[in-house]
Structures are given as C-alpha cells and as structure tokens.
Length: 347
Ligand SMILES: Cc1ncc(COP(=O)(O)O)c(C=O)c1O
Image (tube, rainbow, N blue to C red):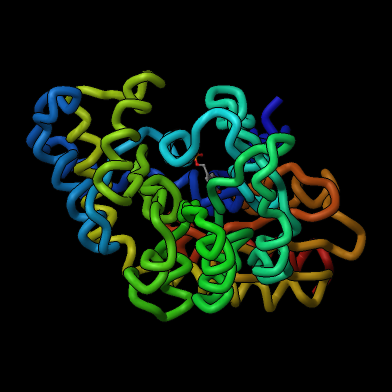
C-alpha cells in the first residue's frame, strides 16, 4: 500500500496541476541539458567532480565543514542518525515528524537506536521544556539520550529561529547533538526571511532534499562536521548508497540551487492565494507551499473526480487533503484548481 499513490480517478483531461506533493516536479529542459553535459567520475573513488562540487557548495552555503550526496531524504536522515548515535542510544523527535512516522523506523531497525516521540506544537516546533523533560537520567534502565531531531518546514510551517534555538539549547545543555530534517530547508529560509546559515547554525547536521520543491529528479545532501560526514560516508556505503557516475544527478542539484531556490517565494504566494479561495469552503491550514484543506463535507471521491476533470490531481485522503504548490504548477494550473474548487462547492 502506498498512501501517496495516485487515486483511481483517471482524468479525462491532461493534468494541469498535480497538487499531491512537490516531489512530483520533473526536471525541465535546462536541467536536463546540464545533466547531459555533466563532468563525471567514480564517486565511490571520490573522483566525481560534480558530486564533490555539490557537496562543497552546500556545506559552504550552510556554514558546515563537509557534505555528502545521498540518494533520498530518507537515506540522508538515516545516515545522519546512524552517524550521530550508537546502539542503545536514543533520539528525541517530533511524533508527527517524517523521521519518526514515515521512514520505516530505519534507525531502530538498522542501528538499534530508540526513538522517543514528543508532541509537536501547532507551529511545528518541539517545546524546549518537553525536550528537557524527555532527556533520560544516567541510569542503566534507560537508553542513552544522544540526539534531538528537528524538522523545518514541518507540514509547511516554517518554525521560527527562536523556537528552533530554544529546543536546540535545551538539548545542548544536556550534551545532546542536534540534527535538522531540512527536506524543505530553503522553503523555511525563504518564509523566515533569514540567512541560510542562521537556521543551519542552530544545529549540527542538516539533510536537504533536492528533489522536492527544487525540482531535481533525485538526491539529498547531508552537511555537518567533517568527522561525522566521514562516518556517514561509511554508513552510506554499507547501505548500498555509494554511487558511481552520479555527477549526472549532482548537476541537476547544482542547477536547482542556482535557479529554483529563488523562486520558492512564488510557491508560497500561490499557496496563499489558493488557501484564501479554499477558506470559503472549509478549514484551511496554509504555510509556505502547503495547504491542509478540510472541506465542510470532507474530501470525497466526487471532489477528487471533479478536480481530475479540471486537470487537477488531489491526494487520496478522506478527511483532510494536503495540497502542495511547486514549480510545475503554472498560473494556468492554479486557475484550473481555483475554478475547479469553485464550481464543485458552488462559490
Ligand atoms: C519532511 C520530510 N523529510 C524527509 C523526507 C524523505 O524524503 P525522500 O522521499 O526523498 O526519502 C520527506 C519526503 O517527503 C519529507 O517530507
């Protein structure tokens, strides 16, 4: 079963706006051209100049010593967690965060690491006092609390620097390290209006996805201290994630950093506009490029079919549906979505 798989509402018209996720973005012609021209080598030998350039670029931008290219956000988080923690150690993480809920408990399965899930506040943050309260005493009954894992953005919410810092400070006071699942790091930075290093500087390691709103087909980069990234490289190899002429993929990531970070504000603006329309027809929680929409009558197959007929793909939820704006949703796609919702709800 795959909760994100397309719903069974084969559209009679071409898809104008796939709103299920920003992971559906496809590489455009310019990105494909740089991929075709990428200089490559064997990256397991450390000889792919394009992969090295991507790793160094992101590490430098975020003010970290080193970076490591990985195949996915899940692999990047997993390798990060395995590099921070040993067997019998524990990670504090938000109950609704991706690392806890949607990564198949990889750190526990493969690393013998315990995950202690904490309540997530409405703004997506973990409360500093909850972090402090969850840190275990030095007692042989307990796992050894080693790491705090944050997420930003969470469900689209850009968690403020102050809130991130408060949670991180509480962890650091007890000797923990801090990892940030920054799958949508640049959406957070854009919405907060801060410098990239302001957010990255709060934590020790960050995993960044290139294949969500940034539009690359594959890839994530983990950045952090050099000794940790050296350990992460070994874990990546062990997990079968060492790749060879992957410069062809890293080139897409570099292109995305140069061209698609600066346009994330458009996605937020479009999400705001669509959110305003939808608020006439139900409850809306909109932040950065995401909208969680609960229509007054719930999400029904009839709504999904109606939207599909307008060229708009919605995820197959029942109560609340998540709509995500991204670079492959054009003005025409946004208009199709707005018209479709209006005609369905009679607005
Ligand atoms: C917050 C967050 N972290 C991590 C991931 C994992 O990324 P991937 O699907 O590339 O493994 C996702 C995926 O959607 C995500 O939303």
